[in-house]
Image 1 (cartoon, protein in one colour):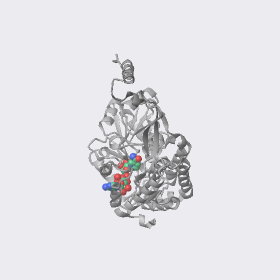
Image 2: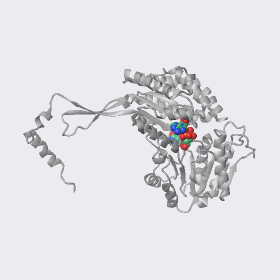
Image 3: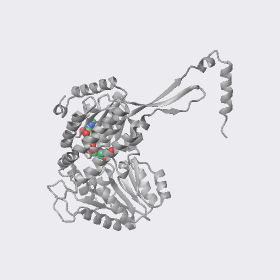
Image 4: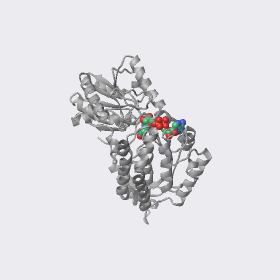
Length: 482
Ligand code: NAD
C-alpha cells in the first residue's frame, strides 16, 4: 500500500495492514536487542533529519506554533526517550530470577519479557509528533510492530510523519494511517495486542468499549482538570512565575497544563500581578508573535471564548493579558486570560480548559483547597508549591493524580525514568521508562524443572513420608500471627 492510500484507509485496508504486521511478527517473534536498537536508531536519525520540517508542519496545522516549543516539548523529549531505552534495553530485556516456594522446589522460577505483537496508537492533535512517537519508542523497545492513526486536526504533520515512517520502516514494521473519525473508529475496533489511545475522556470511553470486544488491553492517556495548589508560606509571585511558564506552553493546549489555581485568598492579587507581568514579558505581542502558539481551530477558539462569556455572565472577573492591546478577532490567537471569583457552576470549572485560560480561586484554609481537589475526578497532574518537604509528602499521600510536580509544572512528563499515565477519569496504564517497557511486554512467568522430580515422591497415594514432611514444615512456618 502506498503512503497516499494510507491517508484514509477503509476497514478492509486496515485489517489487511494489521494482518501483514501480525504475520511479520509471527515470522520473527523475538527481535534481538540489536534489531530493536536499530529500529530506534532509524527513528533517532529521522528526527534529526526532519526536525525543521516537522516544526513547520506543526506550525502549519496550528496556524502558528512556536518552533522553540516544538523543539523543547516534542523533538528533545523523543531523542531523550530513545537514548533512555538504547542505554537500558539490555537490563530491561534480561529475564529475572524469582523466588521458588517450597511447593515448587526444586525449580528455577523466572520472569521473561516478551513482545506483545502489534500495538495500535491513536494520536491527538496537540503534540502530534511527541504523542505519536513517544508510545512508538516504548513499543519498539519492547520488540513490537506498530500501527498509528494520526489526528485529523493535524493533517500536515500526519502526512509528513506518514512519509517519514514509510521511508524508514517497512509497512509490516511500523506504519501510520490518516483519516477522520470513521477511520479512527475502525482503527480502534481492530484486534491489536495492545492499544494506546491519547485523547479526551469522552472518546476514551468509546475506545475502551471497542477494545473490549477483542479483549485488547488499553492504555488510555486522557485529560481532565489538573490543579495547582500554592501553600500560603510559598511566595505567590514565585509560584505565578513558574506557573506562567507551564501555562504559556502551547497556549495551554496540553493535557497536563495547570487547569486552575488554588491560592490563599490574601495572596490572589499578588499572584495575579506576578502572573500577568511574567506573561507580558514572555509574550509582549500576540498576533504576529511566533513565540505564542495559536489555537488549533476556530471551533476550539469558539469553545474557549464561550467559557469566558459564560464566566462573565455568571459574575466572574475576567482579565485578558494583551500587553499591546491587539485586536485578536479573526485570528487564532487568544490572550492568556485569568478568571477570578470562578464558581463551580461555570464552564471554566466544569470542563477541562485545554487553552490559555486560568481560573484563580482563593481559599482560606489549605484543607478546604484539598477537599475541593479530592471532590473532583482524579486529575492527570497535580502541582503543589511548598518548600516544606513534610507538607508536600502529606499532599502526595492525600491526593490521587496521574503524576505530580512539586514547585514546578510539566517537567514530570520529561523525566523519562518515571511512568506517565492517568488514573480514574484521566486514564489508565503507563508508558515512559521501565513501566512503558512493561506495558508493551508480556511479563511471562516461567518455571523450569530439572531432572529431580519431587512431585513424583509427594504424589498420591497421599500420606507418604515426603508429603507428611512437607505438611510438618508448613505447620511450623505458618502459625497464627500475633
Ligand atoms: P479527541 O478525543 O477528540 O481525539 C483523539 C483521537 O481520537 C483522534 O485521533 C480522533 O481521530 C480519535 N477519535 C475521535 N472520535 C473517535 C471515536 N469515536 N472512536 C475512536 N477514535 C476516535 O481528543 P483531541 O481533541 O485530539 O485531544 C484533546 C484531548 O486529549 C484533551 O482532553 C486532552 O487532555 C487529551 N490529551 C491527553 C494526553 C495524555 O497524555 N494524557 C495528551 C494529549 C491530549
